[in-house]
Image (cartoon, rainbow, N blue to C red; front, side, top):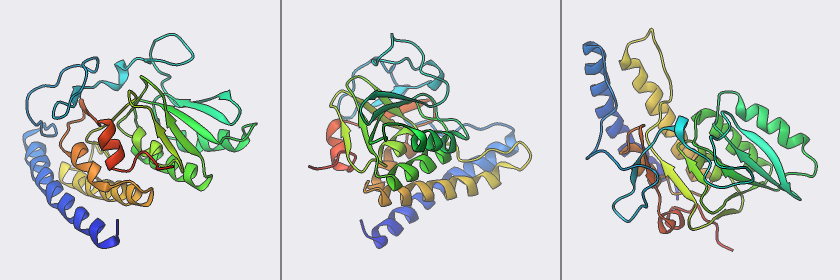
Length: 244
């Protein structure tokens, strides 16, 4: 996608965010506000998705591991790196502040060298996901998702960083609205700047990774307590799956 198309998308996103900004200011004056909801409440994550029915209720603190080397249970609270085969490592858990630097150092120290990371994460810190993604791309590391496993919220930005990206058809990749900054002192009107800056950074990042930034249309229309699960054909269309 060329720079002109990215600029056009960013302009559209800005108009959307200005609307959110107005609501934030009104909510700030009234003392409370939540990001807008679209349509009826979604079913749970255990329900299958179909075209046009892809939003599911989402609580990152209650997302179990679906498959993997250990019995089902909560994922680690923050990212862990575990060797599972020669050059292949499992990267799973919540993405917390500081995880980008911590995991980057572990990858550099790993023996044998990390060639592929198998992802499973409910997401977390967007800035750490972007920083870790940039590191993975600089190290020419591949990303992979396996059957029945999840990559939600900020995790798809790490997934996008793989030089080669493999996603099994029944792996689950999902996006939603993010919080890019918080302040308990400044009025909500200042938070709009965080949203605009954060969304712009994400879209430029996706474009640099070879992902169509239009995938963000689904994120922007899905509230933080829900997740929009991308269908295999959408993952292909948006460029998440690399071609041989």
